[in-house]
Image (tube, rainbow, N blue to C red; front, side, top):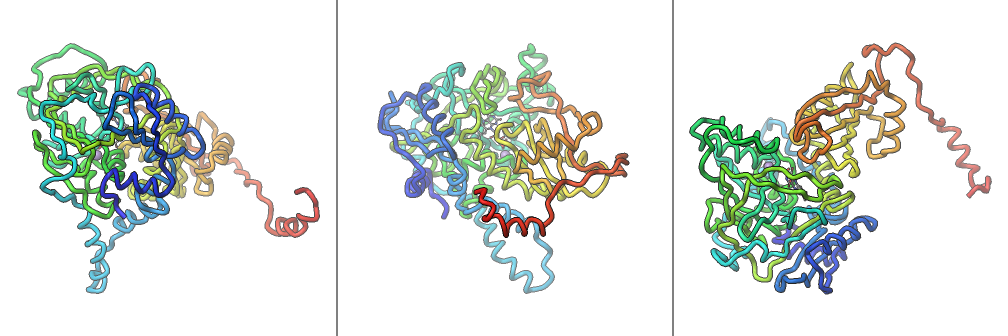
Length: 512
Ligand SMILES: Cc1cc2nc3c(=O)[nH]c(=O)nc-3n(C[C@H](O)[C@H](O)[C@H](O)COP(=O)(O)O)c2cc1C
Ligand SMILES: [Mn+2]
């Protein structure tokens, strides 16, 4: 069931009629975007695309839109329904202490299942077919320029691997990389992401002045250039990047997992088979053995460089800002490599389907902290961080406010600019019903709550980069215990008896 590598996954897509090969010559500069954008916006996300003839890149192929439909997203994770994954997670969360031998025996399959989560280190793998220690150039890869006003060419689907300097655990995060020249690229981990914290930890450890210089550097990178104050931390942090991994790992790199959970384990859980890792040539990190391309290198602790603008998934260009610089020390790749990429822009695009999968899979995890949550919808048009609609089983006064605050306190959900809370009998997937409820049920001055906090780096409207306000709308029915003493009206619904009578005579009416 698990795909052994990107090629195995491409074959599966082909067998399922979910992939088109394009033999005509196309330019990685803008043209691939325009083609893919049209495909993404043709009903249901269109097929995955393999470009076999990329202008200037003989020997390379480009894969794009691999996750770009509900069907492909399920295929990628080997399930009929994403709820299967949610159910598997729930099963692990729901473990009770075994009360006898029989209970213990019943748990054995689960424990055996868990053994598959852990990555396995192997001595070599296909990603080492070609090892380039000196003769490499990042633009040997067919890196796209996505949109006309992009600052350059961006690696858009990289699995960025770093190690927590304190506890040694690894993180895999997807952070785009702007190619500056043959051997350097921007490292766009936003400041609230796990690799950015690894970077700060490395600075804290390296800085003679404790964490002060690190904090200063991060402050500068968060809010535009402020001249350096005090000692700059010296040293570097090693980073490896995998491009073109099997789909469970690529997806795991996007998942907003708790910082200490290794994405290699998440991928192992999703594919129910261990991820195989090999050691890097020039850095002390492990990388997926079957990846198409591996970039090894480091970021300096005292170096930031302007990154962006970049046509982003908000539908706007994200603004230029300072980010660390990745220096390449070695490139390894497969023979005839396949360069996996994506484009983002006005939704819906490929990332919309990735986001929807995360929404489904995270529901049981959200319920660990907020068990009153019935369902969640992150509408694609609101680009995930701008709007979350959540239905709750309301049990006490102020309950909707508690849920809003809980969401703003939960991992990357902290970025949610607007949280809308409705009662459990409102289907949050039915946005028309949600609009009806919200518009009818709120007394705005009373039911809208503002708060301040961190906002997504891509939010161009916030008063400051990365810091701004958020809004919660309590669209639940108001209770007397919340100070609402007027009668609350019933929703209009026809009675069942009348419905049945009309069903019986419907044909005779001759309306249809
Ligand atoms: C196509 C794509 C591109 C992304 N680019 C970035 C990026 O440039 N910077 C960033 O911080 N997050 C980016 N993200 C979101 C992160 O991958 C996501 O927040 C992830 O959970 C980060 O992993 P972490 O929690 O281990 O830091 C991107 C997501 C996708 C699907
Ligand atoms: Mn992570």
